Image 1 (cartoon, rainbow, N blue to C red):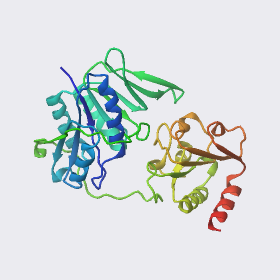
Image 2 (cartoon, rainbow, N blue to C red):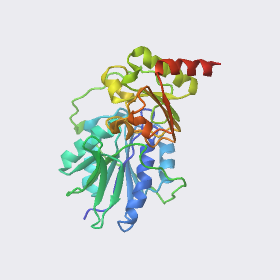
Image 3 (spheres, rainbow, N blue to C red):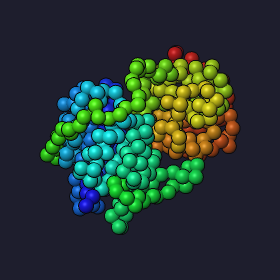
Length: 330
């Protein structure tokens, strides 16, 4: 019988645990209470980098057991390695629910695992709950973000990927007697079709990671050209923030997709979000409406962005931004 919740404990290239793992851990506590206080476990891939620190963090976030796959070959993310090891673990422990952060990596890993296990997957969720029948009820935007759909999975494990930043981490430590168990595996038996050659970092100007930035200066199609985005980059640097973009700006090749915000991009919740030349379609606002304060600059006084903005400035961004930049340089 399937029982328990398993969470994919993703780390970055430096072995640092991703915040979305702790966001999932907090929500899992709520789900567990509706499932007879079932166990909450995690699977962690590592080459040993930052392992003890990650174990310390996980032990304070309500995990009963953490399964650790530790090998030098796992230094670089590999769909073949990670999915095979994950599938083997799931077949062994038989969890009722498997949750993954909807990161770039998670969005690749989740469908491979779901397909291999012949189970369903609800992607890019913004809310998780347990219904009256004890099923995982996963809610996500649909029809271009105009509706929210709650989806059930008929097979086990019930799987969902959840957008980073839409759930909240626990504000207090959740201490359990966390057990750490090494997973036995042999990567030589896994047929990998990909060879890692080199890692080339994205050269988009990002002094602060967009999903961690407390201040974001975002641009839309109204920024018109590369020079427009250079204004955003200059303002972001002066404010100690990061640059973001709407899908329209990305489609116009004004910005890289790695900083796209919205339904098909990242979800962000900075303290200050400055929207420049962004119309404010729901596909974009679904990714930033949780910001503490939203400042919108748009020459169209009827732009939808003003409906979610705390402060609205009707005017030409190419006149307003240079003035603001000069004021900050003071």
